[in-house]
Length: 226
Ligand code: CA
Image 1 (cartoon, rainbow, N blue to C red):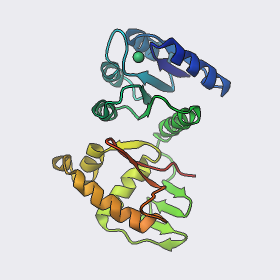
Image 2 (cartoon, rainbow, N blue to C red):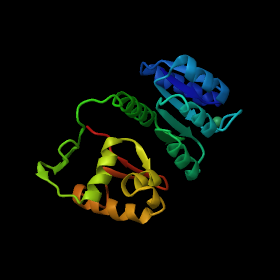
Image 3 (tube, protein in one colour):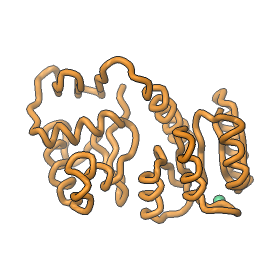
Image 4 (cartoon, rainbow, N blue to C red):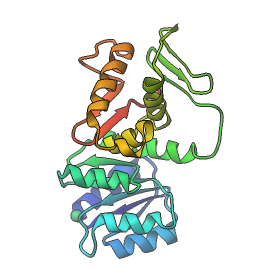
């Protein structure tokens, strides 16, 4: 079940038509209060959350939901405020999608969220592959076209964090805190340097990255594995 929390009737209709056609079951809420009630009642697998709701801020609803549930939440926002997206991701949203968006993009994001939810149970050791890149987290081995790539410990730590969240956007602060620690959350220049190094080692054309993707003003995303 996908719960859409959205006050715009046209958007709700769009969700109903596109997601219904792909076989997803939908629950709908027009307001934050209704969204909270249906999160409890319908036990959704994914929530699509609009930030501009008539009765409360979507971020407040997210905070309430996170008090009792780790259900994947994808923020669907028409607001361009990057600060707001960053706050949403740091408050526990799993991803965001900016309006207007293509329905393929929406479905891809939902599938990533569902996979992440399923992967939360401890499973087999994570091996990430995309194109020529293979990252084996259990063995700490990175290969490109079957040739081992040597990474520094910091480069590897950054890549490993991305691999564990492949397909999902991580904010600058999340990456800095995760790799360099909580005192480094303002040091965005570290990311520019280290993403530059990783792209040189892992991307065919470092100037046009297809794996280590930039989300301007928000963070970075490692391409979904395939
Ligand atoms: Ca709205």
